[in-house]
Image 1 (cartoon, rainbow, N blue to C red):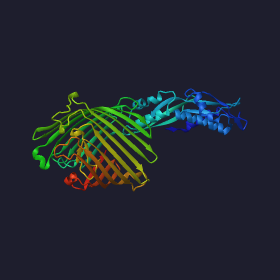
Image 2: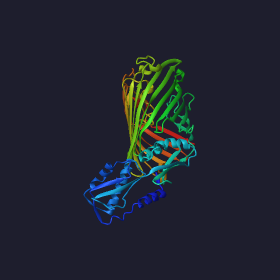
Image 3: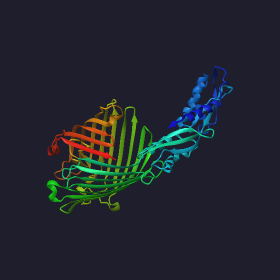
Image 4: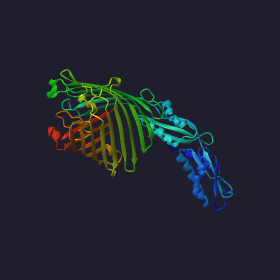
Length: 516
């Protein structure tokens, strides 16, 4: 929020309406206070704010400072268009009078917007502008929420209004076309379905002019036998307090190749979901969001055209996420609860014989994630992460906890081990050798990862629990024109049956993305 010179001149002119020549004596003994013009904050509260001044002999400057304290009180209450002044007066019986100038909201205008409509921006700002006395905290919240929309940046300007004791609010908008196309590559795939994968994402922001967003994504393994994935997601604001509804459709298919191709191992998955999210808290220092929804999953696997598993998952999902900052870093926490509804809506029973791993439905699981980004110096910072999954009973394969891979224990291939419950701890040190505005262009990374997971009901021949540790280094490139490259190389440090099977590496991880 900016305050213009015109608004400052308005405040100064208002203060000059109350010349202070009547205060002839150098000090005034204060016994009490009177207030005029205040409607939004009670006289009792204003008087309490100055309670420590009673019985003191105060100078003219100290009385002006008392008026500033009253202005600050209004600011704390959210009223940024209010000013306290000390009018000319004859102080009788030690009672000092203060005038409160509560400027009302005058005109509201939006300027500079090209892609987002004035109607949409005004709708989102209505909680602020519908009040005679706009609230600073609410204004900050609505601006932060607006600025979360793609390619949209809104700021506020305060100016003196045409009518006495009014202020005008001007919302200055900088926006760009919110439609983007992204191509990407990674080598996170399985050896049997093709490590190398390419993807494309088409993102339509502000699709209908109402802040909605449609995202289409496709991914394909480069191997002749591999994974094909297509997803569509759509989100739309349903209130100007930040509530959004979102919908998801996804379809995937895979076929196993290499030496297992003769077995004709195949599978497919259809996923649909509907969710609602709401930002309960939005400030620069603290954010808190809650979300909930329903997931519908049909997953099939076969060998030689014979079904070996068939999962029908109908899940209620509830979650919360928060982040908060301090002088040296920021913290992130996410919690998510998944409750399978069993046979409801065509789901499966707890003892369905065709469920993967014979796990069945009706399970409950919790996922917790905590991260800390810690600054050590302008060039050095660290990232610490911990994640945990707890499950009430054995889980179908799609819901298991994966150890190994780019965002788990590096030094092992993606999802090298699947368990029903487990945890993962990761620590990174990053060095940014470039200074100034381009400091994020290059980051050199050193890392160590550790994780553990176990099966609640292991089958014959399965490893029932395992701990994995890996370490290595990497590089992050955030190049111009929205181009990112991430490369890591990790070595397995654990000695166990899984490491004996896959070796100690090294394992390389590479991802590339370019947005147009």
